Image 1: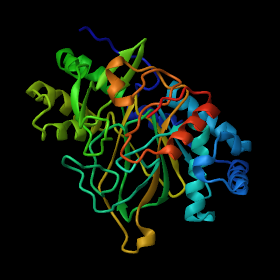
Image 2: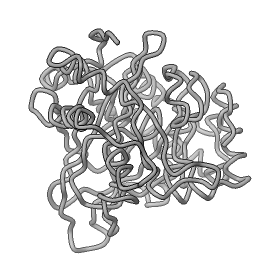
Image 3: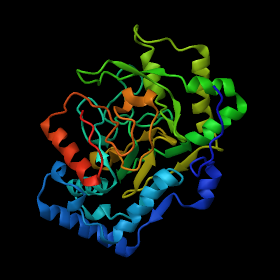
Image 4: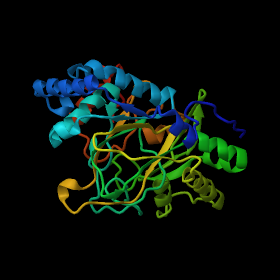
Length: 361
């Protein structure tokens, strides 16, 4: 198969992002006040989080901020960080509610694991990153570069670590183009389906692994699904296709390039920062971190996985991973084992409010 370079604003090098500064949006005083007003209005509804839709969340002056986020995700560099949210003024529960409320305007929240949770707490909780059931969000380990299993991942920083925990992002498209320049044959391996382990979090109606390519294109739209830890874990099973030496070299080169100064953009997420990343065009990582001793000071972020209305169409070979490959449909996430009537009703309600087609679990 013959592949070509991809030209898009998301095909950036680190120096370009650093020089441009468009990745960071500082809130004005009026926009920060609008966030407080928004939260007060949401609290006044007295609705549980799963009952909320975007119609319950008045954005006011914050609307222009989210418009910039949406534009950057699909039409720009692929990520945006909002700085200046008044997290210190809110309780832990209010910060959780605020993050959820903002998410209702961006997309439909997707389940993130065995418990089918729609919002995850990203903190060191004794998890093991490597292995058949390993996930990275509940450890303090340095993570491989990877994508998350949905259109967009959002993070809201509530507490920073004593040291480490640097957020790192690289352009999957720029890396793709560099592999094409260096070794087109090796690039072709990444367009072929590879086994991905479900990390013992599969639903009863899902097989324990699925096949998906790392790179794919449909109707001119590129998408990357690089979850190396899951691909690696698939090889611990006896019933999955074996990776070849060339497969391993192709997977290695993505990690190797992403780690270089040329491709890697580093940032420190501060308390109150909210970051949104397009998984189809960027890979991300995090450095090892050390926590404070006091429980209330330990590193803590909230995470949302979002299926967004204007996301790109995906290739048919990604159907097993995302359940739907069409744009403007609810897709992605890890279904898990706790999807009940409440989650199904939430998804239908949220999809309707956003003008998206619901895709049943």
